[in-house]
Length: 128
Image (cartoon, rainbow, N blue to C red; front, side):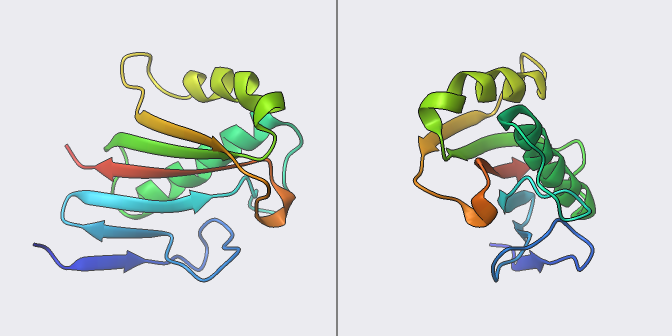
Protein backbone atom coordinates (compact mmCIF):
# COMPACT_ATOMS: atom_id res chain seq x y z
CA UNK A 1 0.00 0.00 0.00
CA UNK A 2 1.54 3.36 -1.01
CA UNK A 3 2.20 5.89 1.67
CA UNK A 4 -0.23 8.81 1.88
CA UNK A 5 0.78 12.29 0.79
CA UNK A 6 -1.06 15.18 2.41
CA UNK A 7 -1.44 18.18 0.09
CA UNK A 8 -1.88 21.68 1.56
CA UNK A 9 -1.42 24.76 -0.58
CA UNK A 10 -0.94 28.16 1.03
CA UNK A 11 -2.28 29.74 -2.15
CA UNK A 12 -4.98 27.10 -2.74
CA UNK A 13 -8.71 27.48 -2.25
CA UNK A 14 -9.64 29.13 1.05
CA UNK A 15 -9.58 26.77 4.01
CA UNK A 16 -12.37 27.17 6.56
CA UNK A 17 -11.12 24.55 9.04
CA UNK A 18 -8.00 22.47 9.79
CA UNK A 19 -7.60 19.92 6.97
CA UNK A 20 -5.52 19.04 3.92
CA UNK A 21 -6.77 20.16 0.52
CA UNK A 22 -6.35 16.55 -0.60
CA UNK A 23 -4.79 13.26 0.45
CA UNK A 24 -3.11 11.07 -2.16
CA UNK A 25 -2.48 7.35 -2.01
CA UNK A 26 -0.87 6.03 -5.17
CA UNK A 27 -3.10 6.87 -8.13
CA UNK A 28 -5.98 7.87 -5.85
CA UNK A 29 -6.75 11.40 -4.66
CA UNK A 30 -9.33 12.20 -1.99
CA UNK A 31 -10.30 15.87 -2.13
CA UNK A 32 -11.67 17.72 0.85
CA UNK A 33 -15.06 19.30 0.29
CA UNK A 34 -14.70 22.70 -1.29
CA UNK A 35 -16.81 25.72 -0.54
CA UNK A 36 -17.72 28.25 -3.24
CA UNK A 37 -15.19 30.79 -1.99
CA UNK A 38 -13.56 32.80 -4.77
CA UNK A 39 -9.90 33.86 -4.83
CA UNK A 40 -10.81 37.28 -3.40
CA UNK A 41 -12.59 35.64 -0.45
CA UNK A 42 -16.09 36.43 -1.67
CA UNK A 43 -18.93 33.97 -2.14
CA UNK A 44 -20.95 34.29 -5.34
CA UNK A 45 -24.72 34.71 -5.24
CA UNK A 46 -26.97 31.89 -6.40
CA UNK A 47 -26.72 28.12 -6.38
CA UNK A 48 -25.54 28.01 -9.99
CA UNK A 49 -22.53 30.28 -9.38
CA UNK A 50 -21.75 28.56 -6.08
CA UNK A 51 -21.83 25.13 -7.75
CA UNK A 52 -19.42 26.30 -10.48
CA UNK A 53 -17.10 27.84 -7.85
CA UNK A 54 -16.98 24.58 -5.86
CA UNK A 55 -16.11 22.55 -8.97
CA UNK A 56 -13.53 25.15 -10.04
CA UNK A 57 -11.89 24.96 -6.59
CA UNK A 58 -11.84 21.16 -6.74
CA UNK A 59 -10.29 21.18 -10.20
CA UNK A 60 -7.68 23.68 -9.00
CA UNK A 61 -6.67 21.30 -6.19
CA UNK A 62 -6.63 18.36 -8.63
CA UNK A 63 -4.29 20.25 -10.95
CA UNK A 64 -1.99 21.34 -8.10
CA UNK A 65 -1.72 17.69 -7.05
CA UNK A 66 -0.83 16.61 -10.59
CA UNK A 67 -4.24 15.06 -11.29
CA UNK A 68 -5.44 17.35 -14.11
CA UNK A 69 -7.32 15.16 -16.54
CA UNK A 70 -7.76 12.37 -13.98
CA UNK A 71 -11.00 10.45 -13.66
CA UNK A 72 -13.44 11.96 -11.19
CA UNK A 73 -15.06 8.78 -9.93
CA UNK A 74 -17.19 9.99 -7.03
CA UNK A 75 -18.68 13.27 -5.90
CA UNK A 76 -20.56 14.12 -2.75
CA UNK A 77 -22.65 17.26 -2.65
CA UNK A 78 -24.17 18.90 0.38
CA UNK A 79 -27.04 21.36 -0.17
CA UNK A 80 -28.27 23.68 2.54
CA UNK A 81 -31.58 24.45 0.81
CA UNK A 82 -32.17 21.06 -0.79
CA UNK A 83 -35.82 21.56 -1.82
CA UNK A 84 -35.14 25.00 -3.31
CA UNK A 85 -31.84 24.27 -5.02
CA UNK A 86 -31.78 20.60 -6.08
CA UNK A 87 -33.07 21.02 -9.65
CA UNK A 88 -30.94 24.10 -10.43
CA UNK A 89 -27.90 22.48 -8.79
CA UNK A 90 -28.35 19.38 -10.99
CA UNK A 91 -28.65 21.45 -14.16
CA UNK A 92 -25.45 23.38 -13.42
CA UNK A 93 -23.56 20.36 -12.08
CA UNK A 94 -24.33 18.20 -15.12
CA UNK A 95 -23.20 20.98 -17.47
CA UNK A 96 -19.71 20.85 -15.91
CA UNK A 97 -18.98 17.25 -16.95
CA UNK A 98 -19.04 15.38 -20.25
CA UNK A 99 -22.42 13.69 -20.58
CA UNK A 100 -20.83 10.23 -20.76
CA UNK A 101 -18.44 10.81 -17.82
CA UNK A 102 -20.68 11.85 -14.93
CA UNK A 103 -19.15 10.71 -11.62
CA UNK A 104 -21.06 8.52 -9.20
CA UNK A 105 -22.68 10.92 -6.76
CA UNK A 106 -24.39 11.29 -3.42
CA UNK A 107 -26.33 14.47 -2.66
CA UNK A 108 -27.72 15.23 0.78
CA UNK A 109 -29.55 18.10 2.38
CA UNK A 110 -27.90 19.64 5.42
CA UNK A 111 -28.96 22.23 7.98
CA UNK A 112 -25.88 24.41 7.61
CA UNK A 113 -22.51 24.85 5.92
CA UNK A 114 -19.42 26.91 6.76
CA UNK A 115 -19.51 30.59 5.84
CA UNK A 116 -23.28 30.24 5.28
CA UNK A 117 -22.67 28.75 1.81
CA UNK A 118 -25.44 26.91 0.00
CA UNK A 119 -23.31 24.04 -1.35
CA UNK A 120 -20.16 22.05 -0.64
CA UNK A 121 -18.76 19.34 -2.94
CA UNK A 122 -15.95 16.80 -2.58
CA UNK A 123 -14.37 14.34 -5.04
CA UNK A 124 -12.64 10.98 -5.16
CA UNK A 125 -10.30 10.90 -8.15
CA UNK A 126 -8.04 8.31 -9.81
CA UNK A 127 -5.32 8.74 -12.40
CA UNK A 128 -6.03 6.68 -15.53
